[in-house]
Image 1 (cartoon, rainbow over the protein chains, first blue to last red):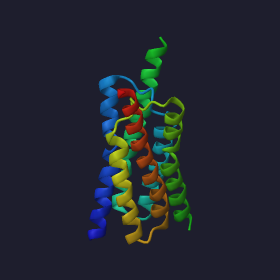
Image 2 (image 1 turned 180 degrees about the vertical axis):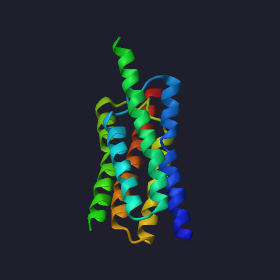
Image 3 (image 1 turned 90 degrees about the vertical axis):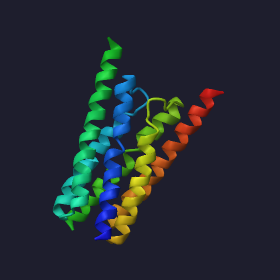
Image 4 (image 1 turned 120 degrees about the vertical axis):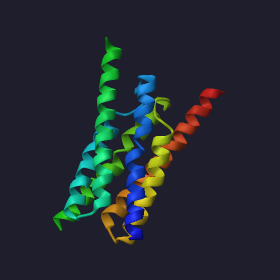
Length: 88
Length: 88
């Protein structure tokens, strides 16, 4: 029981941890210093964790990685958009 | 067995995914667009995952989060250093 709570708190942090990056990007409309590969690799990795969590019936891993995958896809999309705008 | 392999691949991606950000930072000596809170929250979250993995005897979670925690601490330290330099 306590173990599950630790997993849920950990999952909440590693999911919502990406939100400040999205907020900062939306404010500044800049993501130049953010590496493209970081959110791209993390999105793939987190979707694999999601799959792993489903196979192991581990709800903490599943919930954490649904949101984290989505956040990283958003960061990739934002970076793409801002870089494109710059090149015009 | 296959499940463990999926976990190890997922863990490798979500750990090494932070390396390109460190490399980019080292090259450009800039981390302005990277939110402070992202690596800070992720470092706390990943160290909790590490603890969770130990409690659940899950080697994939443990190994993934040792390296990931370290990477995020490095990113926080780099950001701190580069911001300091800028303010001089």
